[in-house]
Length: 351
Ligand SMILES: Cc1ncc(COP(=O)(O)O)c(C=O)c1O
Image (cartoon, rainbow, N blue to C red; front, side, top):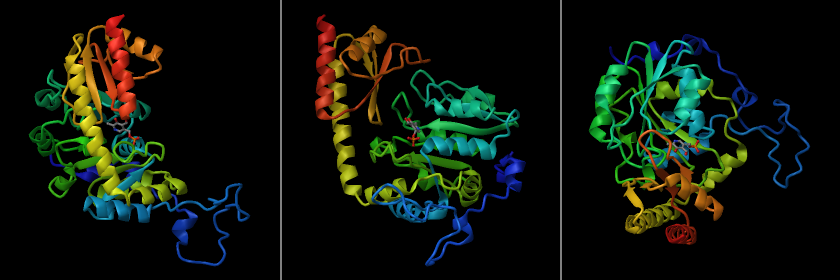
């Protein structure tokens, strides 16, 4: 079977006449706007924000397009990548009929979003080296499979998936292959955005929440073929990205140099921290990371987690997650936070 967007797009979505907002019906300049039931008197804020934001995120998509070297028509913007994930399910998976394939351990929202949308989940766990189990994925695919979720670099394991494996999935699967690149800016490999012209079934997810340091703004990006982006735009809530979020993101996107400096520093600190952890006698494995966190396997991980909590340091306890037995996932902090963490771990050893 070949990839066929019409085949995998839900019929009700194909037929959907999207909501036409006031801004869709009139988007030019005017003296008086009395068309959207906004409050014309203003708001309690100095800058009012009394008008609805641009539903098409034109300026923001143009700026992202320039940075990524891709036309804006290939960019969908969501309220965080989490919204992109949900919109993909709503566009391309028929509730109660379609199934989706995930490769645990991986980012939890693919499963939650599938559950919300009543889409059956099929699991092809990663191999012990945290790479894709291609044979298992192949075995799970059936006529109702719609989306395969790959996360590279993967959360919580931190590693990149082998590029040849991703391309094998892209070449052989007749549905969508979503590659979540939330952590790609910290990685040694380049984004798969450059492969979009080769694979009509590829969707690449990125976010401003990680390297760009803007988790509070909630801006996620999906890069895909124009037809896929058009369908996703039909389904998203009209004003899914607020005016202040769009404004602040536009400002931040002018600072590519500053962000690159932060990435370099975070990667350096990641490697330094990994070296320190490897010296700790009760640490068993520090997994190589292409992200802004480390997955660390250690003796009595859960007790270490509790001990750190007691010292006011919160890490992520992944010790009960499949293939992450006795593992903590530790985000790279500031220099000072990393020192506090290392000191606390030394104290754990001494007690
Ligand atoms: C792999 C992955 N994708 C997506 C997200 C969520 O990104 P956003 O903040 O854009 O919703 C996360 C957040 O931790 C993540 O780890």
